[in-house]
Structures are given as C-alpha cells and as structure tokens.
Image 1 (spheres, rainbow, N blue to C red):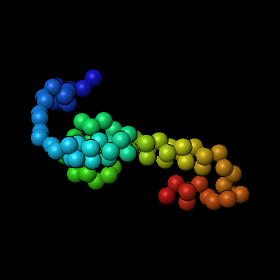
Image 2 (tube, rainbow, N blue to C red; image 1 turned 180 degrees about the vertical axis):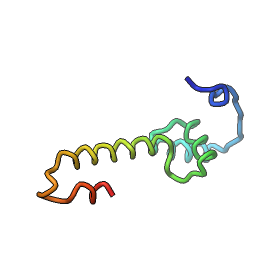
Image 3 (cartoon, helix red, strand yellow; image 1 turned 90 degrees about the horizontal axis):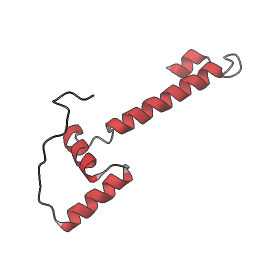
Image 4 (cartoon, rainbow, N blue to C red; image 1 turned 30 degrees about the vertical axis):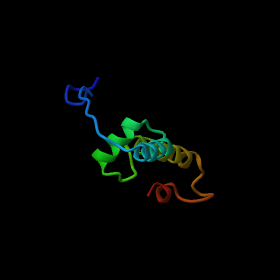
Length: 85
C-alpha cells in the first residue's frame, strides 16, 4: 500500500495545442504508457528515457540472464563470474 505522500490525489491541468497533445500521445504510446504516466515520468525523471517501468523490465532481463548463466556448464563457454560482471 502506498504511503499518503505517494497516493495520487492532486489533479493539475495544463493548456496544450492539438499538435502538442498528438505528439505527447504518440510518445506515450511508443513507451506503452498512458498520457498522464508519460507526462509525470518526463517531469519527474527528466525524460531520461529510463522510466520506472523500464528499470523493472531491465532487472527482469538481468535476472533471466543470471538464471541462464547458472544453468551453463562454465567449462564449455564462459566462466559464470565473467558473465555476471
């Protein structure tokens, strides 16, 4: 459960041109985010292209790679420690 500070309870409105709305919606769709989530991520995270959702997905990929590394016979390919680094 989110703390009181993390709960989204405030609504702000901004004025945008139709072209701006279209551009933002397209960018949000590319990142599989809603309009609102995309706007918040850009504002809070500086549009650094790594959103919290992307960080979670990257961690999942790293975990999968580590599982694969654990199943590989280290003498056949690469030492597991090298792959982990």
